[in-house]
Length: 144
Image 1 (cartoon, rainbow, N blue to C red):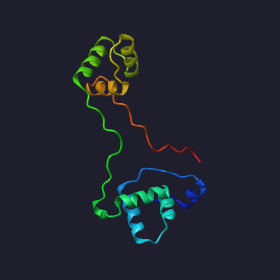
Image 2 (cartoon, rainbow, N blue to C red):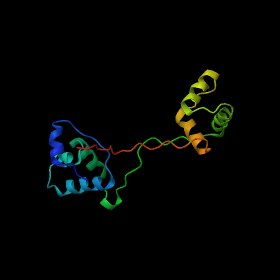
Image 3 (cartoon, one colour):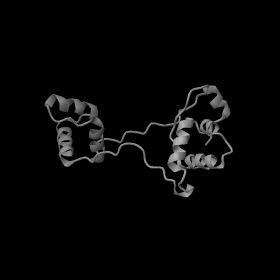
Image 4 (cartoon, helix red, strand yellow):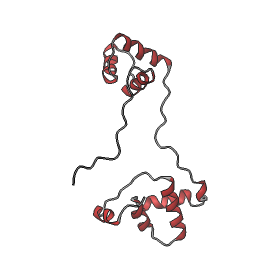
């Protein structure tokens, strides 16, 4: 997917950085190897900075295009240990609270802090709550 030239010119001098997928990454490397477009043009086309294009070229320049892999970004989640699971489920049986209220109740009782995200995951895995709905990435556009 390429950004339209109209959108890019509306940005002015502001830089837009976004996550690149495997296809975009391969396109950038291929175009840099061809040498037809400038680094600036490739960066504007993909919505990233020219410096980042050079970094990608340095990192993947010697790698064949079919061997380029895009790793999963983000920090890996810690596994939930049985002690945390036991504490949360016991408290939920005594007092059925939501995850955020339960986190605050833990602070009042002096129980070691368990983040509400982990509490929500424990309750969802146990089938005691409905899973949180994913936020829709595309915004609905109203009547024009």
